Image (tube, rainbow, N blue to C red):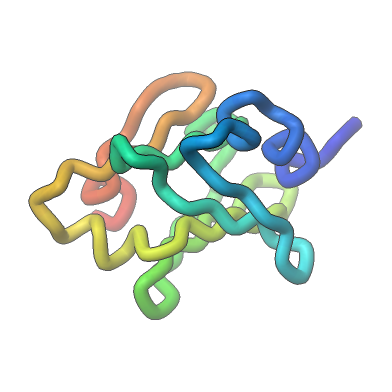
Length: 98
């Protein structure tokens, strides 16, 4: 069974021209697309923990996989309406850091 990181890199949303996903030291690193959206190929229910590290948000899944949303901690407090699209719904960034 592929991990979230492997699955993310092969999913259409992550591999599309509008967003980028890279594996760095076992963590999946994502950038927002032009619509200020992070596409994540897992459910929100699978997220066990959300941490702020510098300007990034680090999501840890129940199986320990790390997903780094580049610049998301900073963007969560902006007025630009950044959001995260999960398999089971959409969350505004500011809701993830509260």
